[in-house]
Image 1 (cartoon, helix red, strand yellow):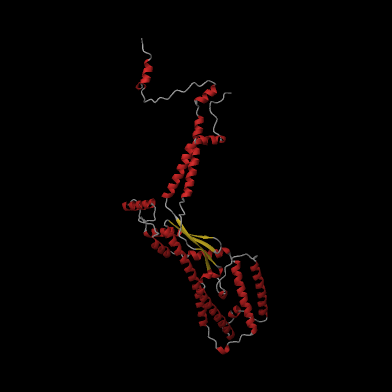
Image 2 (spheres, helix red, strand yellow):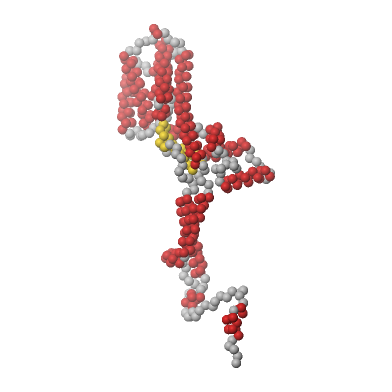
Length: 416
């Protein structure tokens, strides 16, 4: 059987020799790719990011003084969703328009924050609209699209059920920092306003209910006995323990030592309250739900609502003095020191990798095609004949007679 007249194909063991053979070309391609990647990073439009991290405590939603009015949250998903909704409801269309006017965020052909290709695309769109080649965009649709684009630049990431990271991405570092700082201030103001508004609404409802009841005379008010005072103390302590349990269980599990201790205390207080109820004591809720037509029911309802009204006034005054107790700022907005995108080091690494692997691929492809052809040396080796030499390649556009040496060789020796 005859051996085919071809050289052995390229294999992986010959890669070091291949790299050594084409090392100059590979180094040049790698360096060129790194330089081109760095230059491309400098030409692309930059994006900067600034952010803040905010934690909203569970006591923002609950107070021991008004636990009967404000609904409790139990599931972590519900707690996370409610906190995130409090942050997102700040981003109203009017507030987005205010930010856009303040910092010039909406796109326009004359905006200095746009890159050269974005400005060229905007100019081209205006030119085609003027010639009637394209349909002009409706102003309301354009405004809606710009608002949506601005909202998409605001990122709200949930780190856990109580902590959120809010950031803003834009091409101008000063505008990025300013918008982030304004959003942070607006979120804090909105949180305080919502809580104050909720307490004020409950207080107004209690006040309205009190005004609808007949005001009892002082002589008819029953004296509080020692037994009733002790029972009310147990009831108040049980309400405080359950409020503390609500705060702890929203952050820790039931196996936490402090949670287990409070659970034991809750069971003891609940048993005491059940014993008091068995002996004839009526809780505040039971007294409030009694018949208001009877003098005793009216007095109990009026007394209970008066206490609640005082508690609400205390809670509102306390919120004004301790507003920062309901949330904590883990990271404040900072001026962006470097662009988020593009990073020159990353683009240089990508360019170097593309140049290196691209040059290796081309070198391997070239070597493979070179070996698939039949060369003179391989033919001499296969036939077992000596190689005397190779004929030079003479270009066809060069005249042989133009060279004196060639002309004299063609004429031969002089005749005698």
